[in-house]
Image (cartoon, rainbow, N blue to C red; front, side, top):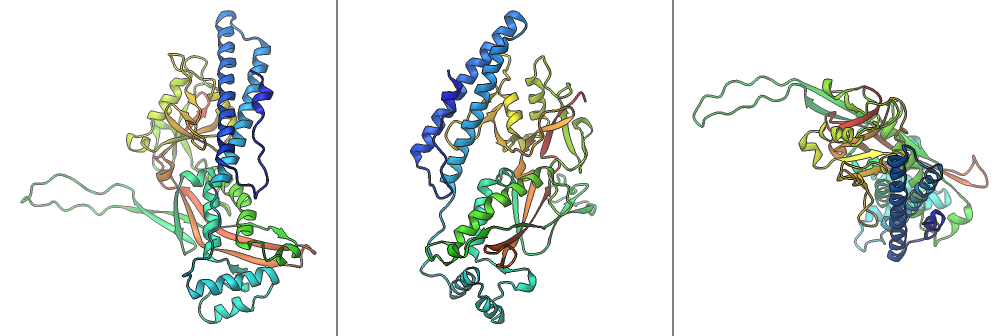
Length: 423
């Protein structure tokens, strides 16, 4: 099968383009054709290794081309599905409250014309929507919800993590370090006095994340332009990229702590506050013999209660290596999505693609497995602020948009890692 032909896919049009179901189906069909070609080429490579102890360089090149085509097809499919899933901004409900209408009208006047008087009047009426001294004005609730919906669709870790919304600057989660005293007792028996549990706290501070979209005054003067939707679309990709990187690798310095930040120890000596790992046994690669055994070990390093909702997290290059693996019966361990918009699976568990995960390399933690809903927490502070700046980049108007977000591991037993190292 020709790799170039497989790489052709429906064109991803501009941001305003809303793909039809037919576009998504066509892209999915092209992706599945590319995967069939990939399996045929890889089977040919494995047969050559078995018969001649090495593979033909031409076969390796063919496999690499099809692998790249498969990645491109998956990227196109993901973009189409993402665009199709993004909700349209809802029309103004007939029974919006007076406060909501006032806020929306005042905010639009501030954004379009720089007239902040109406926003100040709302502050004066104790209907505070933020003030310039606080770094801008709060966007209407609908715009904030739209930004949140788009981030959930665009940010891979946010989509699978637990989410908590707070109104303060720090979320504190208490937990018992030694567990609560429990036991069996008869109905009329005297209950023994239980020990007071030892409690500790996990802290999740909300850090400031910003984006600065620019607009021309002509665009702002155009009454047909939906400013709520425009702001949500402009900050969507910027916020999602920064969030995704921090949720994986963040060090807690003015950003969330990623799930790769805590200390890592071999699963045999795991302790609370650390992330357990399973080693492949080979520096920078899977083991040559029975490489799937270590994947099975990783799965069963997780307790049964977490495995029910567990998934793999890795980047695209790691997936390319995993695609080649088979079990003892010659069946591929990695399977494509069963439907457009679905997740690929590995050993029957869904796979989330996060490009911020490390590539396979010596002693790299390139693969994670766990119940991320229970294991990782994203903390959103209420309120998205916008500060209008018509001066810094004339003739353009800048909109300094900020939100506060934090994150970190909340259950250290719910996430396990694969270390591509000897031990």
